[in-house]
Image (tube, rainbow, N blue to C red; front, side, top):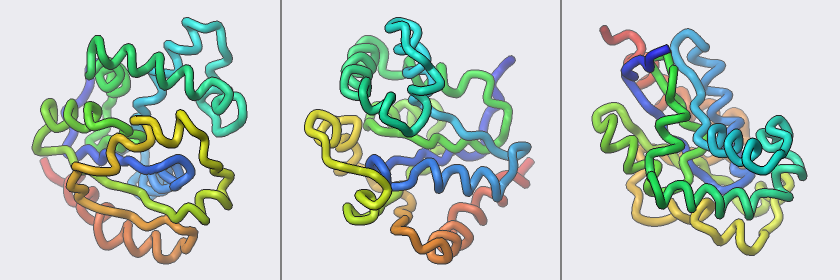
Amino acid sequence: MATVEPKLILLFSGKRKSGKDYVTDLIHQRLGPDVCCIVRLSGPLKQQYAQDHGLDLGELMGPGEYKEKYRADMIQWGENQREKDPGFFCRLAIKGAQQLIWIVSDARRLSDLQWFWREYPSQSRCIRVEASEETRRERGWEFTAGIDDAESECGLDQGVNFDWIIKNDGDGSQLEEQLATGLLSIAKEKAKEN
């Protein structure tokens, strides 16, 4: 199945436990599956890593301890793949996307953003999801050396002019207001364009 040319690509980044998946799932629910799809760059990475290492893909895709056990090695393996071909995981992730709006839920590196900027310059928008360390700890985050100070967590901390910064510290009404006045209205407009 061929990939459809998108009208809008929302590239989300943020620290572990900042709530990227929660925010992107919320946007997906508001816009609907006919209009948008969630693209996970980590999906193809985890699929290939699981296959190469004989691991349970379902557990690697989840939020639990199983993924955390393999995270550091998986990050290094992914970096090695990106050195060979920076767009490898991006191309796999969008393969077959049919909706007009793509929500990339897990952009983690400048090379991810650069690939989308180069391939889809007029459609790509960058969004940063932020939460305080206190909120992230309440969600189960604990600093882990080699993970939280690696490029996969820090690569977009500087040098990116985000189109939106979403504060996600647990106040649902504040989050809804941020989405309604920015991202959702623009996404709905783009979906109506012919």
